[in-house]
Length: 261
Image 1 (cartoon, rainbow, N blue to C red):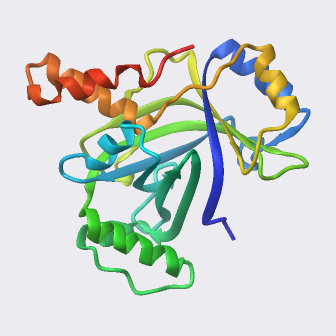
Image 2: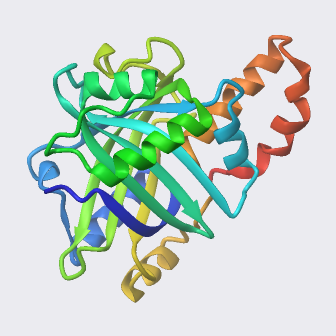
């Protein structure tokens, strides 16, 4: 059974292709590829992010609070309406990430999010998480805001399965046609295909060998949110087109939230 509740720290790094390749070659001594990646170079993760009409969740997240949460629908590849996907809540409290998700048929997930009526319980669902999502839906009344997908290569620790390192590339997004089954097309989020997002995910501290490896390659952690980065891009473009000036201070304030190193 797939894990449906996670508690872990997530540390992010932006890498150029050469550094990314060299790190992957070195970590294989301590880690092994995800089962799917053993036969495929990448697997595709696709998401629909939900937010309030005034984008409260992402605006709050970008303000660097001690507590923040997101609601998203996640699938793999291009799912069909009858395929199973995950509806999940992702929270972050003082740096610790908590992710809670339940399986749903894609059509069930859409209906749940749109009507805010819980589906009839089935064996593949997580009843507790369904109740938590029900609360979030009624509290925020969120609507689909963003499609975001990327191609991933993942590694797990050989002796420590709680350690996971992922490498994401070809991050793309769109704000129209917000259905997972509509395809994984979208515009590129990062300015270059040579930039990769690496995430180290661990329940506790990262191992000494990994700290030494990152130091050797002069890789430094960064603050980077895929959804947050896309949102700031949208606001800047809106301003450049002469859009609503009320966003000027907020979007300018957030310019330094991430950097390419």
